[in-house]
Length: 109
Image 1 (cartoon, rainbow, N blue to C red):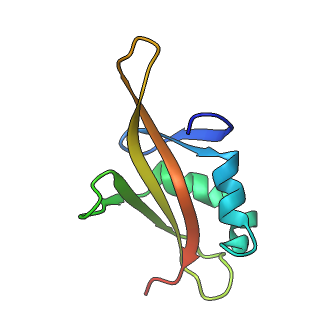
Image 2 (cartoon, rainbow, N blue to C red):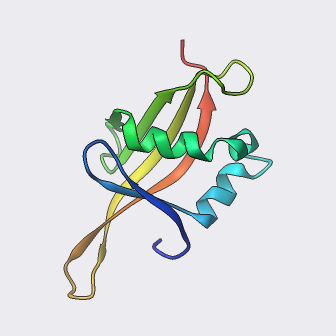
């Protein structure tokens, strides 16, 4: 999943995380999370500055969450799910491949 990168940012731990065009279209699809269409900058900021939590059952999966006061409905946070993986580089050594799988808004009390 390396082609079609929309953007790449570093998280607060200096890991590069990217969003592909395909994933953005998935996120904003009318049957998924169309409310995210106007919040791409919020998603970028969520990855850049928030804490993350590792999934206990899938250790390569991380959840980033950040509060915002201008989201739709009663939502309070942007949540992004990032997979931390490796791909093979040109020298056949592992290269980090950390990408956003999905993102959505959620009310967190």
